[in-house]
Length: 162
Image (cartoon, rainbow, N blue to C red; front, side, top):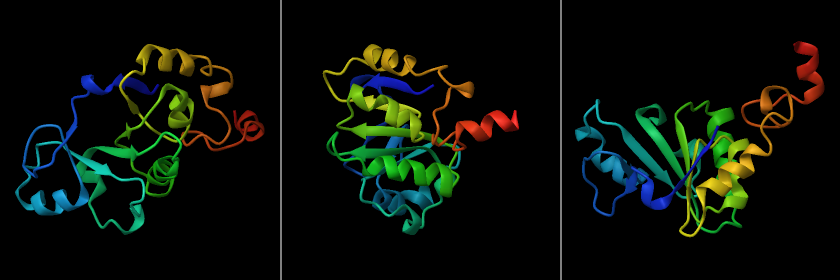
Protein backbone atom coordinates (compact mmCIF):
# COMPACT_ATOMS: atom_id res chain seq x y z
CA UNK A 1 0.00 0.00 0.00
CA UNK A 2 1.20 3.48 -0.83
CA UNK A 3 2.57 5.61 2.02
CA UNK A 4 1.46 9.22 2.46
CA UNK A 5 3.97 11.28 4.41
CA UNK A 6 4.27 14.94 5.38
CA UNK A 7 6.98 16.86 3.58
CA UNK A 8 8.94 17.51 6.77
CA UNK A 9 9.08 13.78 7.65
CA UNK A 10 10.72 12.74 4.39
CA UNK A 11 14.29 11.47 4.64
CA UNK A 12 15.07 12.15 0.97
CA UNK A 13 15.92 15.74 0.05
CA UNK A 14 16.72 17.61 -3.15
CA UNK A 15 19.97 19.56 -3.19
CA UNK A 16 20.89 22.86 -4.82
CA UNK A 17 24.61 22.15 -4.72
CA UNK A 18 25.58 18.82 -6.28
CA UNK A 19 27.52 16.69 -3.79
CA UNK A 20 27.84 13.07 -2.77
CA UNK A 21 25.71 12.42 0.32
CA UNK A 22 23.11 10.31 2.08
CA UNK A 23 19.52 10.25 0.76
CA UNK A 24 19.89 13.01 -1.81
CA UNK A 25 17.52 13.49 -4.73
CA UNK A 26 19.57 14.59 -7.73
CA UNK A 27 18.46 16.06 -11.03
CA UNK A 28 19.72 14.29 -14.17
CA UNK A 29 22.34 17.04 -14.67
CA UNK A 30 23.55 16.70 -11.07
CA UNK A 31 23.77 12.90 -11.42
CA UNK A 32 25.83 13.16 -14.61
CA UNK A 33 28.23 15.48 -12.79
CA UNK A 34 28.59 13.14 -9.78
CA UNK A 35 28.10 9.64 -11.24
CA UNK A 36 31.80 8.80 -11.58
CA UNK A 37 32.53 9.58 -7.92
CA UNK A 38 29.29 8.20 -6.40
CA UNK A 39 30.07 5.12 -4.24
CA UNK A 40 28.26 1.96 -5.35
CA UNK A 41 27.07 1.23 -1.81
CA UNK A 42 25.50 4.69 -1.35
CA UNK A 43 21.84 4.84 -2.45
CA UNK A 44 21.06 7.63 -4.88
CA UNK A 45 17.75 9.27 -5.69
CA UNK A 46 16.64 10.84 -8.95
CA UNK A 47 14.37 13.90 -9.09
CA UNK A 48 12.55 14.43 -12.38
CA UNK A 49 10.40 17.29 -13.56
CA UNK A 50 7.12 16.22 -15.11
CA UNK A 51 8.19 17.33 -18.58
CA UNK A 52 11.25 15.04 -18.67
CA UNK A 53 11.29 12.54 -21.54
CA UNK A 54 11.97 9.30 -19.69
CA UNK A 55 12.82 7.30 -22.76
CA UNK A 56 15.62 9.64 -23.81
CA UNK A 57 17.17 10.23 -20.36
CA UNK A 58 20.12 7.90 -20.98
CA UNK A 59 20.56 7.25 -17.25
CA UNK A 60 21.07 3.91 -15.49
CA UNK A 61 17.67 3.88 -13.77
CA UNK A 62 18.53 0.67 -11.93
CA UNK A 63 21.25 2.59 -10.07
CA UNK A 64 18.68 4.70 -8.21
CA UNK A 65 17.03 3.56 -4.99
CA UNK A 66 14.16 5.97 -5.56
CA UNK A 67 12.79 8.21 -8.29
CA UNK A 68 10.77 11.28 -7.33
CA UNK A 69 8.41 12.73 -9.93
CA UNK A 70 7.41 16.36 -9.47
CA UNK A 71 3.89 17.68 -9.56
CA UNK A 72 4.33 21.47 -10.01
CA UNK A 73 0.55 21.91 -9.51
CA UNK A 74 -1.94 19.37 -8.27
CA UNK A 75 -3.92 19.91 -11.48
CA UNK A 76 -0.96 18.96 -13.72
CA UNK A 77 -1.09 15.19 -14.19
CA UNK A 78 1.89 14.55 -16.47
CA UNK A 79 3.78 12.79 -13.64
CA UNK A 80 0.99 10.15 -13.58
CA UNK A 81 1.91 9.30 -17.17
CA UNK A 82 5.61 9.23 -16.29
CA UNK A 83 4.89 6.83 -13.41
CA UNK A 84 2.94 4.49 -15.66
CA UNK A 85 5.71 4.62 -18.26
CA UNK A 86 8.36 3.83 -15.65
CA UNK A 87 6.39 0.89 -14.25
CA UNK A 88 4.94 -0.68 -17.40
CA UNK A 89 7.21 0.12 -20.32
CA UNK A 90 10.58 0.62 -18.59
CA UNK A 91 9.78 -2.04 -15.96
CA UNK A 92 11.34 -0.03 -13.15
CA UNK A 93 10.82 -1.78 -9.81
CA UNK A 94 12.34 0.69 -7.32
CA UNK A 95 10.57 3.13 -5.02
CA UNK A 96 8.53 5.75 -6.85
CA UNK A 97 7.73 9.00 -5.05
CA UNK A 98 5.30 11.84 -5.78
CA UNK A 99 6.74 15.24 -4.88
CA UNK A 100 5.62 18.84 -5.18
CA UNK A 101 2.04 20.06 -4.95
CA UNK A 102 0.66 16.68 -3.83
CA UNK A 103 -2.72 16.75 -2.08
CA UNK A 104 -4.86 14.12 -0.36
CA UNK A 105 -7.34 13.99 -3.25
CA UNK A 106 -4.60 12.58 -5.50
CA UNK A 107 -3.95 9.49 -3.34
CA UNK A 108 -6.01 6.97 -5.32
CA UNK A 109 -4.64 8.02 -8.71
CA UNK A 110 -1.10 8.01 -7.33
CA UNK A 111 -1.55 4.46 -6.06
CA UNK A 112 -3.15 3.31 -9.32
CA UNK A 113 -0.31 4.65 -11.46
CA UNK A 114 2.44 2.99 -9.43
CA UNK A 115 3.62 5.44 -6.78
CA UNK A 116 4.90 4.00 -3.50
CA UNK A 117 5.21 7.26 -1.53
CA UNK A 118 3.27 10.52 -1.70
CA UNK A 119 5.12 13.42 -0.10
CA UNK A 120 2.21 15.70 0.76
CA UNK A 121 2.33 19.47 0.56
CA UNK A 122 2.12 21.40 3.85
CA UNK A 123 -1.32 21.42 5.40
CA UNK A 124 -2.30 17.98 4.07
CA UNK A 125 -2.98 15.24 6.61
CA UNK A 126 -1.37 11.85 5.86
CA UNK A 127 -3.99 10.08 7.99
CA UNK A 128 -6.76 11.46 5.78
CA UNK A 129 -4.94 10.28 2.64
CA UNK A 130 -4.43 6.80 4.09
CA UNK A 131 -8.08 6.61 5.09
CA UNK A 132 -9.13 7.66 1.58
CA UNK A 133 -7.00 4.87 0.10
CA UNK A 134 -8.53 2.40 2.55
CA UNK A 135 -11.99 3.02 1.08
CA UNK A 136 -10.85 1.32 -2.14
CA UNK A 137 -8.86 -1.59 -0.70
CA UNK A 138 -10.50 -4.97 -1.05
CA UNK A 139 -13.35 -3.90 -3.34
CA UNK A 140 -12.11 -6.14 -6.13
CA UNK A 141 -10.15 -9.41 -6.13
CA UNK A 142 -6.50 -8.60 -5.51
CA UNK A 143 -7.62 -5.13 -4.34
CA UNK A 144 -6.58 -3.55 -7.66
CA UNK A 145 -8.96 -1.64 -9.84
CA UNK A 146 -9.20 -2.36 -13.55
CA UNK A 147 -6.37 -0.62 -15.37
CA UNK A 148 -4.02 -0.27 -12.41
CA UNK A 149 -0.31 -0.47 -13.14
CA UNK A 150 0.01 -3.46 -10.83
CA UNK A 151 -2.96 -5.30 -12.38
CA UNK A 152 -3.73 -4.09 -15.92
CA UNK A 153 -6.09 -6.96 -16.88
CA UNK A 154 -9.80 -6.17 -16.76
CA UNK A 155 -11.86 -7.90 -14.10
CA UNK A 156 -13.48 -10.39 -16.49
CA UNK A 157 -10.06 -11.70 -17.56
CA UNK A 158 -8.86 -12.01 -13.97
CA UNK A 159 -11.81 -14.11 -12.88
CA UNK A 160 -11.23 -16.58 -15.73
CA UNK A 161 -7.52 -16.93 -15.02
CA UNK A 162 -8.02 -17.74 -11.34
